[in-house]
Image (cartoon, rainbow, N blue to C red):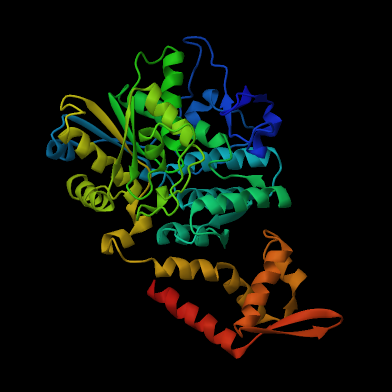
Length: 467
């Protein structure tokens, strides 16, 4: 097993996995596994993600919350409504934290324990942050999450309840990734960002293994694209099954993006050699809100190798599909997942997918994580921004509400999971807002909460009762 750069093809030892990028050209790295000969692979008798351990990068520790083994739902009513005979929904909402990212979180936290890391950091649009927070809690590890300004409220709530340290940085996940990359290097933290850790693709390819055991190989597989890694993960899984002689065919892969965040599709349509950048991406499907996907080349590779297709859908079409899935199949899918049904409808109407074709759509996460979409497609997520602003500052105020203290002590009380510079930045901002004051004692700068700060804490408690 080796690591290979997806851009220049350079090969590296497994020791370089957490560097995230090629030392020669800066490209992303991918695992290259030497597959056993035909008929030599044996899966365990257990159900779930770890059943496929023989085809995963090996780890000694095993952190699990019961991930994987999700159902392949035969969508008979939805199929009839769309004019299809064989439509299936791979329901990843049945994972422990209600998304497909639990597979990656399980593998990465296990790997982090192997390497004796105590803190993991990741940049995320939401699902991976929720998953990683839960698995770090299970493993007794610290979790530092970098999120952009726009993030689904439900996913943020999961991160908070699992006691992750949440830091807001940038407007979109592209900027948050830059921050996570820098923090991992500065603090010597385990890099768990999906785009930068090749274990994520390896974990997510198990979705293909499960589909094959549940159905076989479908004619079409449809997935939403954000950074591009998910559709490639599934394609890689199906290819490995064929290389092993287990499967005798491959599906055509369909990649879907919202109209306002469609850099991968723009790259394909304009036949560009480099991934196009959308300067101001916009969509209410926040899980796939990306400006310039780091794994866009991998997504395009999956689409082209499979003789598949790529298309865009509008937010209105996504919203309609979300309601359609819920009404006809009793499944509450998040907007990014619902985009797959919106795309399927277009492909059936244009006869690119025939009524007799078998189709699997990937439902990556639960709509319970993004309930604001059902209220209005144009409503801004004020509560999300509010929650992010308070995540660290609220903790500081609560410490000071009990006892005056100084910066270094605060850093220790908050688990040493961020830089001391970040702590002092929060203290400075709280001081400017009149929520705390400072004074000198024993040659140290102590901080004390003000009456205004205490009123803010009471207001936060009142707000939490309403949310």
